[in-house]
Length: 115
Image 1 (tube, rainbow, N blue to C red):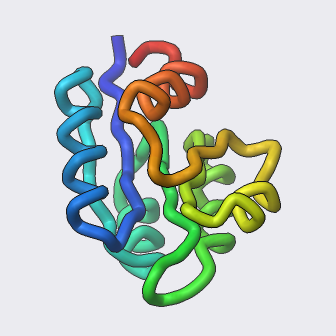
Image 2 (cartoon, helix red, strand yellow):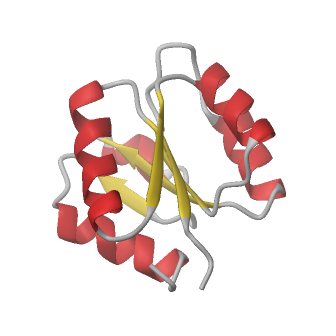
């Protein structure tokens, strides 16, 4: 079974750490990226199975990163506290903040069933 690798693109350290801890506890290797620029660098350097992407990042819109990740076959789940903004990203899997860790894991298992 292949190791699932998740890139967490989230600038709020508390949320990023909590998500990473939950994923790691479920056997998923997690890497935290605090910005679009950092995420673009990381997705270029390493193959990831999954990206959890916050829509509000300090260096702008994550659309370019999302397109790049998808082009590499990486599954993307978007997260936001703004339901209207989140709706604009359907049909991607969506997580409205604040979310329960159980809801996060359910989304992850749907897009990466080996988790």
